[in-house]
Length: 370
Image 1 (cartoon, rainbow, N blue to C red):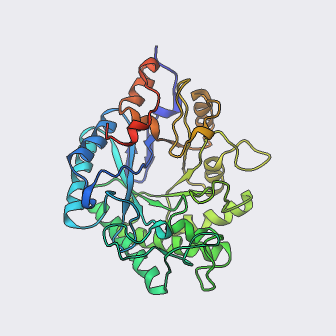
Image 2 (image 1 turned 120 degrees about the vertical axis):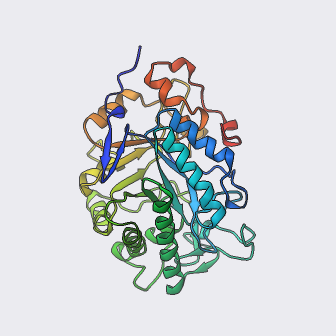
């Protein structure tokens, strides 16, 4: 007997794009693209998720064309003839299977360490030369560096549209470069890109404006942001709905269509006095559709969530709560990570009530492309 998944399987429309359902595959770094080029195994990996019924696939982080953008081995680039040809094959495969796909455009900032490919001599770049509050790494960016990175995001977005992608996601979360500008702990600049919340936002706003300029008015732009950082799970960009509204308004004006509000557990309230999570507050305050994410638990022994650990293995939050929140239009889209990493047919099995066939997540899925 099929589960009543209600709004998860309603179509979603934004500009000229219609998704077949409200379920997205969350972006997850995979390290299977030598020299930055996605090959046949990567094409097949994304195709299988589209064949499994996922409405929107958000790619793993793809680094833009800046010398310091990459921070990890064998992650895919989003520039150069070979890499873009590989992504074209991914796009075509996903479309043939009925899915839609956005690339996640990424610059790691001060997470990068010297010795990392493609040029081991290049240090990390960041707003103030800080990996975390009080912890130095790499170089503080000049105004010319800032302009170069903004252009790199614009170039990547323009290429994404030319390749046939359905939109783009800009990675502004988890303590990477854009988030390092947003986070007061790593942005100690005294120029127009540092200081107040509005000034710390400027770099991200200018990236969104550049992307919008390059792709035109009808190409969806999604921005992923988070309160937590890989450097500090308890970090906060904003501490109240009023501050969140100040954060969101300039981004809406710059051209963001969808906010991907990254949390570690989707059921946890963001601010006292309300059950709304970060995506719920974001959608309410911005007037734009929001995507939630975080440990969507659908079986007794399963927790999905990009950064779950043993300490995070708390009681399951059921599908009923997810459906209720979406029925209440707290957020319009939900991203699922590890469940789809483990099993490309996960969504289809859940839809058809074949829960017993859903395998619990195993770390082996991180080392292979199922």
